[in-house]
Length: 313
Image 1 (spheres, one colour):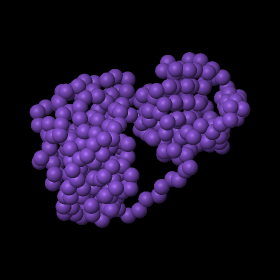
Image 2 (tube, rainbow, N blue to C red):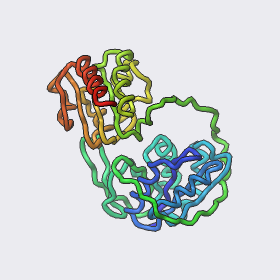
Image 3 (cartoon, rainbow, N blue to C red):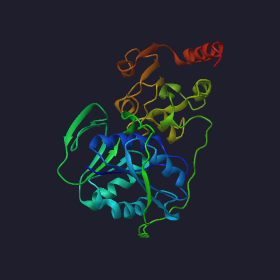
Image 4 (cartoon, one colour):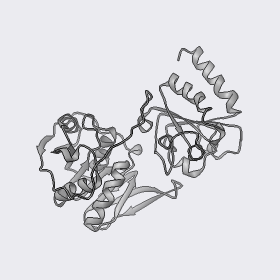
């Protein structure tokens, strides 16, 4: 089975989600190729070529790919699709935007957010907000797949794949990139952070999130939030962790004042270690937490900050 992985990058750096998607593609079978579409993205292509298990990197270097636009990427991917049995992308914002269009044009069902590859046509994926794991067998034919990368290890380096240029596909003229507003922070990006500390409705206000920010700065952690906290206007949408937010799997996830609704658990239950602080001992978050503290967060969090300071953080 020949697979094509759609690379996630910013024209300078290859995202780790790509290396994790390569791991999923290798599990389907080899050879594995990677498509790098961007502008002045030679460095990204070289990084992709070093991934173990990648046989070829195909580069579409053109101004129209400087920013990912679904309609433009669609024509490029479809121009290459005939030579591949499977097309894979990380289940990121870009992947979720582009791949359904590809599946529709190829008239095949998309296989979404897989967490394991059981065979060339058999996959596992979460359903019902992660409360159940479905094993599905895909019909014969071309497969369009998005990968929940939090469950796959990144492919290591050591590869020496060939790099070849591919022509840009015609611009369909349906849409164009106009602009973007990026939130800037000195803290690590939420989905890539090794430690995440999140607050919920129990924080009571946005001003109280400064307590979590102090902890985050000491631990070099990212700050997240539950949907309840976002809906209440405590923090911006890009903080949201959960089924309708970002899916994270850090080494340590600290949940503060979060009850643990299934929609939130779906976004963080794959964390390696989960610690929870909540004054309600019956809160569902304690059912999956490795460490739980039944306490008033307005007392416990400042005490945590003091102890971290004593330890030199």
